[in-house]
Image (cartoon, rainbow, N blue to C red; front, side, top):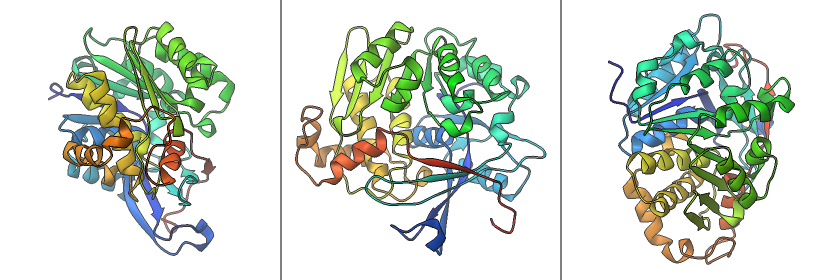
Length: 355
């Protein structure tokens, strides 16, 4: 059955190995926790936590970690029927270092990543046309055949559904990063919503200024532009409405995954037809919630948990964007981890013994 989905995401998946020792480099880490990860996958999980019927279009290897991905997705309530097993490729692994409040280097082990090998034949075009929201990512544009597959997935969307482009800038995935703006432009031509931080909007539309970037994104044809601004909060703009929110103060544990929590909550608000302000408040708080946790997918909050955080932080949320507001110094750190692209280092494939 291919109908009935609220949210379909396309993009990368990984098995995340996050150190249990905080504030030390990988050379000194002794133990790791294993989680489901990958931006598009995390967004699908976050959407499921909000009650959306979700699926992710991605690829895994024919290996035990691919089995883990499928089981984890099902455990989170995400359909795995669009996960493709790609022969001859390994399920990606990602490691990180955790230096709170604002330094979380990533190390990608994804040579010949299965998600970048997906072809048009791997697409469930009926499901993609019918889904209320299709979520694509900038990293999916970084190489062929994923690039053409991503663009084809949103070429025949029915009117009334949203197509979200998560700008998701990972320069190490691109053989020639200078090609990225042109491919972002192609994707924006199909998008109704664009989401990115200041690093990402600069790649897409040539400016880091949030207001100018939002205007340029709207000029490209999207109906909603969302620019995450670090400690200055988040800006959302349509042709007739503008919302600015300050970040919510939390004690940052691991900033990775905060943007994906934001994305899943944004998708839920769009699917539910919520007012833009309420949607942004939920997304803003979801990102803060996950920044205070160790994991990404495993930490995605429910709406009840988000509303509890908003209630505890109501004085801060109502402060103008850019106002430091009450709370600990980690409030600014939250902004920096959700508003910039974490450092990332590509790495060669590990052997099975290293896994």
